[in-house]
Each structure stands twice: as structure tokens, then as C-alpha cells.
Image (tube, rainbow, N blue to C red; front, side):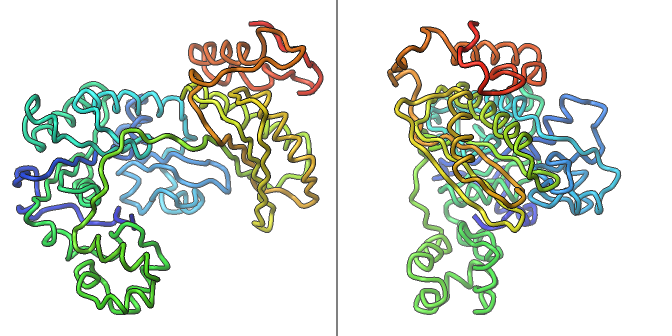
Length: 419
């Protein structure tokens, strides 16, 4: 969707928590300033202060900003340096995805207690189809109120909910309800709700397409709905024109799909200063492989293809990948492959960013493991799983990636430690 976070909060009585929810089985639940809210929940001394979560270095980017920080103009995806200029007295924190993932899991559990038709979009938002839950839990708006109350009680966090006939409109509803609100868009009033909104609220409208539409004199969704199709097609292409006309008319037939399977899991790091030192680059790739391996194991997934991403100082980006003979979720194998890809690439320029990604995912429980010739029966996966357990208890900083692969040289010890 476009940049609908700029939508004004609802005040129209036709669209509110008490509006008619007949024919509105779709809920979009969006946590409020999720990462920042988790930090404030876990550190009560931060309550009421502007809090910004994201990269804290000179090239960092804001991931989440509390509403106190947003009053100063701080927004997600903004460079941290810009955020510091706008709000120098804010508390700036690096992200802690272990805690955010745990909070997300608790929130999603609340949703799944209501309906099995839950489609997570990210850690902090999901679509729900509650048509089948009415007999047990009441009307959609009642279900939305119950979800908001349970999330607040069980996680200490707030969320905003949009209730509507379709996913697109429900998403807009939750955005307009923020923060900590509920908004129902009645089926009979969808066009009344949509048509005054700016074109940027349409799913798929980014900065460039917004500029194109505005050059055509189309500033609102209603104007897009009334525009000649031929004009839209010439400006945007047939596929985009058809897509936007359907949304502008309030038509979005997509269903809530609970069986979404993640296609890849990855991690990357942008260096504060461009790097040429191979040892530092190797350490960075090792840490990334360790992070990806942990995420794979928590998700119960293994992957077949290791992908390497390298961005040079001039922003030229190069990607390389290699498919393994046997799927894996171990950092050791990912790192060995990623480092081999990097060595073969042999970049001579300073490097701004590196990333490691595992693709071709499959459920670990359904994937047979083939023991390599001469490999011990118990090895790296068991060692890394033991490290996962220790990290869960004592913190990831205690169990670093170097402890898995050997501190001096990641290729020095070929026999893995026994857990």
C-alpha cells in the first residue's frame, strides 16, 4: 500500500467503533509503534519520553519511533542522523529482535485463539477473517474490542484495528484508527470512506506513481475511480491501471491466507564506515550466518540455497548464490558457503554492506538429513542448538558466533564440538 501512515485519524461518526459492521468479516490488527512500545514496556523509566529504535550509527535507519518522538517529525525508514537532528533528546536504542519476536508470538497467539484464519504480514500486523467466529465471540466489532483488550492485558502493548469488508479497506481502517483505536468501515459506505483519501493511500502507489497521478490531476482515490481507464493505462501500464481502478472502486477479492510460507530468511549489516579489511568482513559474515541460522531453527525451517549480498561504497550491489547438496539450518555451513562466494567474488572496492540469506526453505521436520561422509553423528547443528538454548537463558551476547566456529580462525577446527 502507499504511504497511508499519513492518513488523518478518524473522527467521522459514520466510520468508528460503533458503526454498522454487517458484512465486515475482515480485521486488520496493527500494533502501535511496536518495537518502541516493547522497549517502553520493558523499561518503564522510558514511559512518556521520545524513543527511537533503529541503527544507531551514522548510516543507521529508524525502525520504529514512539508517538512522543513522532511529534517531532521522526518516522520509520528515516535516517537516524535526521531523526537526531529533529529530536536530539530522544532515547536511541538498537533493535532487539529476540524480544520483538517473543512479543509478536504472544500477540499472534491471541489472534489464533479467535480464528484459525490469521495471515501475519510482519511481526506487528496481521489480517484475520472472523466470519466463522461470530457464533462464539459475537459481531466483528465485538471481536475487535476483545482482541484489543486481551493484547493489552496479556502483553502490555496496544494495537489498532480496522474492521471492513476487505483486506485493503481494513488496512486503511487500522491506519486511520491509530494509535490505540478501533474503526469500522461499513460495507455500504466503503466508497464514502475511500474516495476522499489521497492517492498515496492506494496499495501499490509509491512516490513515483503518486507523482504521475498528481501530474494527471488525480489527487484523491475518488478522482482515480472516475478517471478514464485509457489515461491511467497510458500513464501506468495496463496491470497497474487495472489494479488501481479495482481498489479505487472498493474491490479487493483477496482472502485471508493463513498458510503463508516464508520464502527466505536473511540478515544484513550496513557498516558505519566502508570496510576493506577481510578479517572484519569475515567476522561480519560469520555473525550474519549465526543470526540467520538461529532464525531458521526458531522457525523450524531448513534451506537449500545460500545467497550473498555485497554493496560497494558507490552503492553498486552484487549478489551471488550457491545451492547445497543437502538442506541446512547451521551457521557453520552457511558461513563456509558465503565466505567461499565472497572469496570468489574478490571485491577490490571498499564495502558498505554485506548480507547473508537462506532460500529454498522447507520444514525441517519433513526434510531428511543426509550425513556427510566421515561426519560425526552429532555435530554442528547440535552445538548450535545448544548455543540457542544458552542464548535464550543468558542472552545472545554471552554466546557469540565465534564460540561456534572457533575464535582464532573459523576454518581452523574441522571437527565440531560435542554439545
